[in-house]
Image: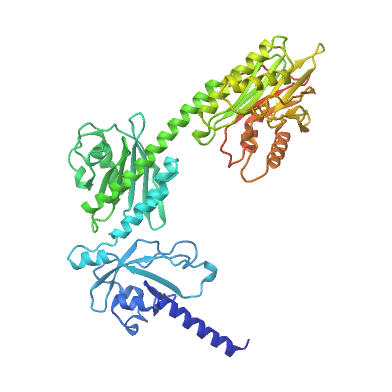
Length: 575
């Protein structure tokens, strides 16, 4: 392509780009490296009631209104010049052609550092509500929000809180929405479930970003019963209030007022708004927003916005606390349903139970180990189908039945499971379950062996003393509840000195993003690498490594190790 053709193409492209920008409903300035306006679209000229010659060639600062309390250029964020313009909410006042002020809001037009070409675009929209307020004689404010902005902020707050049960992260997200859009400081005081007050978050917005002031966080005095001071009223859920340093110049009536005086002195807050954090059934704390300049004091109109934010935070916080209570109750119930381990001579044994990340998924996984009349030890790992407290209750029924059959009918493992399968649908609420029932045996010479049957459960993993391993796939049949008349078999294996045997539930290997074979392979590789560790450390590290991050199931695990001759085997213990 020749130079003349390239030049012609470039002219066409530039013309088409200018045409597109002229059709936008927002103002756009093109600026050179010295922040001079080199081009302005039609909307910007209409907003300012100016012609292109009156704007093009001027410094961007020169088009700001002289009465604007601050004359900010749109801020840049990131490492490169022009990487991104100011976020939505940055405001200032521009001067129309007749000298009257026009409230505008800058918003981002991101530009990658490698795309830097010496010309940057600055886009803005008008803030009609602020302009009307100025025309009516009210104070100019670059932080005043239009009704549209208030609704957008509340929508953003709700979006950040939905499905987030991490209280600390929820608070940080909400604070990032409010600073520096509304204030320079944000302070969150929360009432704990025991009634104590904790200053959970103090954040300061400066030119470099947001800074958490941990030195200003920590325990607070208890909520006063009748103090009229702003924070005390908010913590009781009585009212939201405007405040400033003079609010706390009076002798403090409570220890809370003393702490507030310290806060205002340390932060330099000149004007503040304080509102309760209310859930559907209780007051959970208070939010304080503070500005360090008195030029833009908070007004009663700001109280309603912060109250709305406080209500949204309160609902999310109360839901998160309710979830954590449910989770704790369910996990406690599950732990109490799980048995204590027998003490075995010459064998190490340990177990683990990890509840599901979601409280509703606590349920049917269990392990068991108990002595049999002939001196053998029964080993069980199982999983009742379902993920709730009903599954946990069914697990307890099935476990107790299995114990009774195994003790009363000193029979082969597969016969015991066949009997359990036939009875399960008649005398329990369990519809389906998987399990492995094994007998740990000892011959007259002291050699250990394992007899087992598998009802649709992931296969046990056997490691030798060198870390070599294999899954015990023998003795496998369908899960319980699928066909009570289906015959079952069992298998035998020797457990040489130094070997480790691992029983586990599917929460350790299943993932929504990969096949089950991948999970089994990962488990085998991790177990082989960790095998030299002490047994308790072995299972802890295995859980940390092998459990898939996206698995929302609980995990039960039982591990035994046959010590080598030179090792002294400690007695087993129940966690």
